[in-house]
Amino acid sequence: MQNIITIKDGVTRHPLYRLNEPINLQIAKGEHVAIVGPNGAGKSLLVDTIIGRYPLLMNEVEYDFSPSESNLVCDNIKYITFRDSYGDSDGTYYYQQRWNSQDLEETPVVRDLLPECKNQELRTVLYDLFGVDTMLDKHIILLSSGELRKFQLTKTLLSNPRVLIMDNPFIGLDAKTRDLLHELLQKLTEVTPLQVILVLSKTDDIPAFITHVIPVANRSCGKKITREEYLSINAGVPAHVLTEEKYQRILTLPYADNLYHAEHIVDLNKVSIRYGERTILKELDWTVLCGEKWALSGDNGSGKSTLLSLVCADNPQSYACDISLFGRKRGSGESIWEIKKHIGYVSPEMHRAYLKNLPAIDIVASGLHDSIGLYKKTHKEDIAICEWWMDIFGIKELKDRNFLQLSSGEQRMVLLARAFVKDPELLILDEPLHGLDMYNRRLVKDVIEAFCQRKDKTLIMVTHYKEELPACIDHSLYLVRNR
Image (cartoon, rainbow, N blue to C red):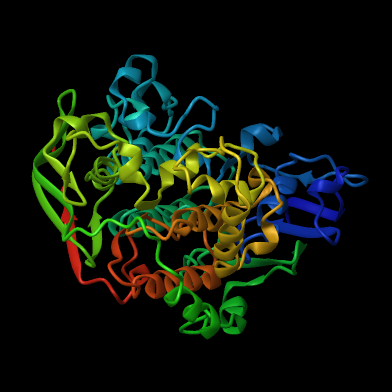
């Protein structure tokens, strides 16, 4: 039997990138694998070893890519990481860049970044699946997070890899596109030599075309088993995982003395947003009252994140719109920083832009000052409240770890603690459960539900998975893409 990837007693030379046990792994021709495990278990380290990113002490990784004409790893294995799925990680992206139209001239359009493809049938299928034709002339920084994922998937599949490795490929995609991507990958595995390796945190919907599962836990690579065997032994997550003690701590947390007391939290009056010839929002009227819990939904590119950028004043066009927050009309003299003090926020754009290699507790503390990074000295009482929220989210032990050394799921938990740290009146969660394992997804949902029982707390939440919405949701807004 042909083994396309073989690792025998694999131990990386650099101790920082080692798993706790030597890696022994074989992936045979025709096998499609899901690498699964909790956040911080070592899934990404295993993949980095598989692709040869880290040299090994003794036995190097063995590859057999036939029938591919090339033996080079870079030609045969393509890997879309968690951060790559939000756009090219070239270090030039900054938070709020997507909303600043003056940067457009210096950024490429989608058409210029897609490679040539000899297989015109594959190209047509991909363009139809992901709606690429509508994105071809859009500047890359104007793509929504979901559109960026579609772009990255198209770009990678057009390169015709022998092995495709994807980190959580289905998150951020609307339900229709998720289903179509499942079907496309299954079809490709049936009619081409392509082999797929998925890195999955959300393990309740492992695609049917996956033949084997490699569990990773405690920085150790488990034995490869069949998908059916894994599903038969995989225990589910309890209905609630937040302890009663932590639940009560959230409910009884003392309120700040500088709270806004307004009946109207958000008022948008016939708000329109345009970029060139493209209309994102058209004459939108929306009112959010104090204590309401909203689900904001819509297909990829329908304007959900743009709408939230207006509420958070991250979008320069917000100052030309008729918008009131906490009963105060935008542009009436109040500092946006005064407004932001009362808003807790997490989003894919924020996660993508957070490249600050600071200790995790400093990342949480930056939420007290609404900064990307920490530029003010943290007071003793601030450290205490940061540790308090990190404990609520079960990540207190990560407080001294540098942010960029954490797994993507651990990073998301840190950014969630950052959103809650000032006990905000308005909590805005844009796809907050991205990259989280099943336990942490349930934990965060429990924390949201407990937090929303506090007096005068208002929630706006975006997700493409209905089951992620907390039970407290009482209003919904569905956006439809404008052309």
